[in-house]
Image 1 (cartoon, rainbow, N blue to C red):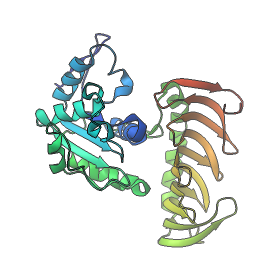
Image 2: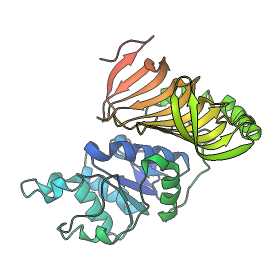
Image 3: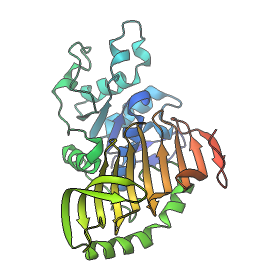
Image 4: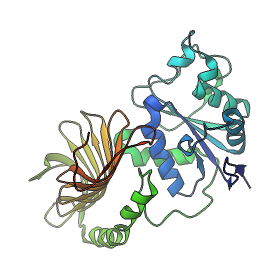
Length: 318
């Protein structure tokens, strides 16, 4: 059994270690952590206070006990590594990667949008990462990328997937509970919708009175309206990937704001955000409920998961 002892004296199993830069890879790393955890993998992610106490000992312990090492590579991932004036002792990503390579772990690189490969002049202790392979990243078809990623893993899920996946981006357990209450009704509605769908369309032009014009790929009802799990692409580059009910944006979804670089994951109700997590480009995120697409009740966090503000009855974001 793969077990490690935490600073609280408790044991925990780990299959996968995720390494990333906070200022460029946090959003993707946190998203993958949530999905992999829900799919039954045990994942080491440093929001659980990995860097408290004796970091080096804990680091070696966790990497040593994991089968897979996922490396999130953003466009600035190796800037510190290649900076001759930066102290290598503080380059956590390099230390993590070097240890994984030294121990012969299954290193799976994830090259984010805009990254075409590794620098030619990487230090010798991590130069071997250039020979490693991973799935092609695509934020607009994230589910397809995620399924390919799992095929690269050596470890297998150690438990069954949770019955609900509403909490894909939820960090606060108390907020997750509120979201999970929606699960039962959602799955009943989902099954009915899938039975009602009569055809599939690809890149079809659709118009919603609130959302406007978009190109749609997915199932439709007998009137040709989006109905079921599909993908909407808007002219400005935004995408909505999730559930539709007779042309209405409704149900579980992921919405990507192309211009702002923001992301929402949760549920829509009648063409508007209802409940979930909204992540801004700077890493700040809000988890809770929405009203008229604005934050309503919930908690605002900074990029490190620290509470910035608790909202009640639609307070304005500071």
